[in-house]
Length: 634
Image (cartoon, rainbow, N blue to C red):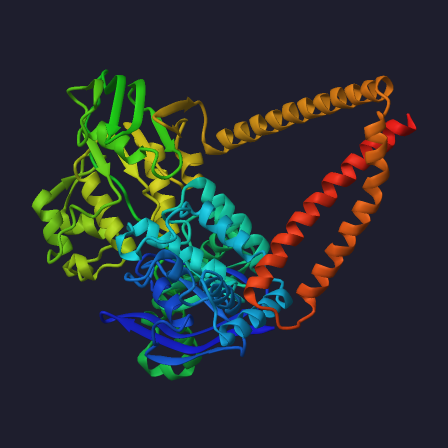
């Protein structure tokens, strides 16, 4: 069943053609990842499909009664409203009924009209089976680390917190079409893996842009590539897409190479022919023009080239001895000792807010340790790629920024190129080099930032969330570069794929300043955690079984040794009619609450409390009756 259709979409931005007569469809059950180079227009395409931005031409149509949930990178919240109010600002209609119901419940007294509204809402929410919604709200807020922030004004939140609120809002909508733009940014690994499972289970039709290749591989059944204004669709997950795309490129390049050989032969033939006989072989001349068109296509060799000169690293790199660091009253690093060695490759993982970025700033010298020693080697030159854009100054052109560092850049192979040639290697051809920083896409800014970091020729490279906003092709090249990087490497990342490919061991931030050193990559650490969890669960199950067996044994001994007293015998006689009477009253209350007859709010509250008390009492008396009956029988 078709949910969404787009026909003949065209869109230009800053004189760049992003969409060129694109046609796209989304059917029920399609789980699509949109991939393509930075600046290709992926985010713009999502906004057009979600109805948040107009196309220059073309039509987008959504099937009637189909709700579209859109999570934007910019996290469009109402800054003057609380987190809770933003969550339900535009959401599932059931949520609005729950909110109205809760607002009536907190009132001290209700008018007759409000009384009738409360009764109506009670019936509607019962019919909609919506009473478990509060549980879902708490789960989503807890998993996204937003618990306790429900009443905080959105304008006071950090960028990452706003992104998580926007994510919670779209998940609570439970839309038929879920459109997500970089959903894993600003989430820690635990939250990413939870979100991965939730989306796979609960949402059937999805379109998303993400750099997280594990996330994409485990959720998506189609990959759509946007490049040079056109879409190419691949059935299957990300792994299948890679295989098919590689095959397509190889076949196309072989076709171009073959056409070039034929072109050379045909060109020689054309030149040898007398002009008078030209019309006689016109068909061959026409065929020559077709060959020429194919032969002059560019073979795909446009991969980003990361290559810079690197300074020699000495024997002493960076030593940390019994380092402690406090931020206010928070102990973020506790008695940490580690001596970095040349060529070491470390990944840093842990929940958000446990001090990973503060630790990185200790390494760079931006933070000063509270106690302990940090000793940097004389030849250690740190290059720090941060999550901020501090070095990128608005108003400056890209070529100006690079030229300020160096007009001529020395590469790893000792060759030298101009600043303009260096930019071209980073996929900024001469016309693009004149762009101002503020006109670049998020991914293009990240590429400039990486370039500026590498221009310093570091031998100790620190990358803080390097995969955010990069396209997948750039990530592949970055991973290859890091694989060949001879210096010391430290990566803070929630990108599981990147960590698996580039690091040898992990600093795991446990909280309260505790940092453990795990010898392996992320997947190996995850396996180890799962094995520990299984062992703990088995140990706890064994303890529970032993405790239960011991209790049964004690109960059996007590039953043999103790007979009923006169008072207990009397109690047993009275319990059965008491339980019967309580069951009768419970049935009466349940019938009243479900009858649909008008009941005042005070009476609803009173009956609910009585029902809860009676249910508890029935359980208690039933257990007592069972205990006394067994002893009497023994």
